[in-house]
Image 1 (cartoon, rainbow, N blue to C red):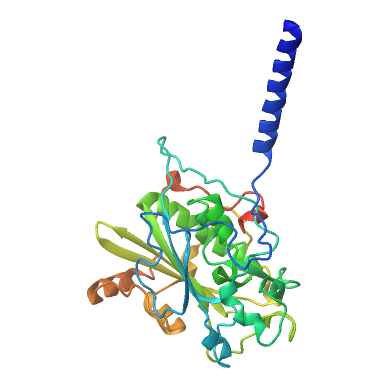
Image 2: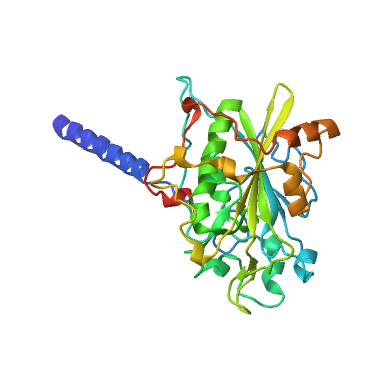
Length: 339
């Protein structure tokens, strides 16, 4: 009887261990949204974070979430025929902190497999309720993804540094716009990798990103006319990285031009292209140039002298980052879930 009981206890322990191993072995996956037009995970800006620390203006329909702040088109923008911001944010900003272990090596955050369908929000339903269109923005990208990705402004793997749930929450259209696929999976991704290394070196980095429209050019959209929400394709994208060291603010500004289908291959995919092969300097520009191109104002909470000082160096080459601070790098396998 004792032997049978011992056998049962051992068998139960082995079964429990196997079940636990199976549970832990199962990869994390962002859950679907269901029928509720809100983010699937509770979200709050963590203590010690200020995503819009340097106050970008103007401000439109504002969203403040755990991993980013977004300024999205308003209903008035949507109803204004000449407004270019159709179904996309005007700018997104966020703060990213260092993740370095006691051994001096970067800590890679836990992430989850992205959702098949991106998350929709009730606050943006004016885009599809008048006139009656297919609900949501995700449907507008269907059939266009090979050329135009749902391009994050606040990167998913950057948000994972707060939590994997906040990483999931980045898959919403107040944080995305049509981005040329080769660029999104190439040079833009290389810059996102660089931003992680910069955060690890300087302690924290602020990112401001968004669309650029050229006034003399026609604006194309994705989606099916009269069926899905028309979503504007920007002519270019901008990204600004900001650091603060010893009370001094510095910025580096970048401008990436979008391309057309016949220009595929102009951007090299991050997968298979070593990080060292990307010369991000070719995208360098100034804060003044971006303000002129976008109509936005950056670093508005700084004094005039500090803004001028930040602008004066904003077109310089990216800050040098030593090898020990790098985590993600281009040149490995194609990990689609990181795009």
